Amino acid sequence: MAQITLNQEEATTLRRALSSYVSDLRMEIRDTDSWQWRQNLKREAVLLTKLLEQLDAELAFAGASL
Image (cartoon, rainbow, N blue to C red):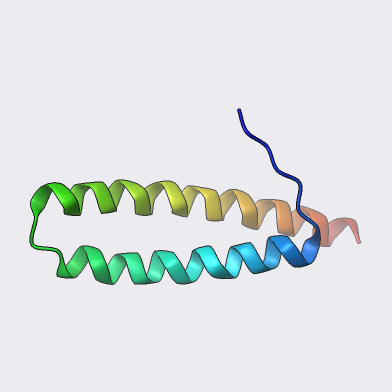
């Protein structure tokens, strides 16, 4: 299992970038004609959303610790 350590600023920047990408990905899913490609994009969106949730939880925990 891979693990990375980020400081508060890095984690916040990563969260913002992922959130923006997921938003763009949803538009790409909507505009994609290929059923198979759409399914791949949907799986990617689900995975990234889960990662965002984990990152949010870590940021909330770090904020509560300050």
